[in-house]
Image: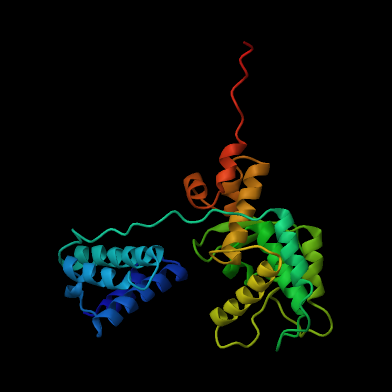
Length: 290
């Protein structure tokens, strides 16, 4: 059996989110590309895996290498359980540096939106004013803390015509409740003017080859506004907006950042999302009157 054939059967046997399946597919593809042929199950050996990881690490960041390692080891252990091959034993570990946890303030995000308001013209196909499209998207990311893929699936009936609305998050498959401020709902509403064809989605893609290609153009446009505002985003605008949103909620209401993020564990929120400054927001013990 080929490794990619096992992956198909593995995904049918388990209730796995589409985003997880995609990560497994990418990992298998990278491994097979390194092999130069379709991988067999018995290609999964400590030596083979270590050689692949060492080569892959030459051109990719540690967190990317770690992701491929994790996906392949999950599949390898399942294969060992079902087909009796040896489990991974001495597969090299990947040292990953701490991820950046810098954040923007509300004022910073306001400056980004001010830059985006200067963008002229309308998007092709969907005929939405670019300024309203991008400003609404950034404002919604700031207020909800949602990932880009989840924002792009929002419908007008959710985001504009209701108060709290529930989103099933693509990455985890978990339901998550969100709410937008009236000013953001007003910006989104403006995109449904008489020039734009009728639609359900607040932020539809506009005829690019794939949704991912469209997402790339969106990130480029917003990054241009980030730079124009004199700001930076080392890991992309939407990851930083999500991190900033979660941190802002945690600072305003300690313990609530986890729920704003849609995490099932506070450890995930603390480890990967909260800026270091949150730790300095804690109270001191009662002063000793000495």
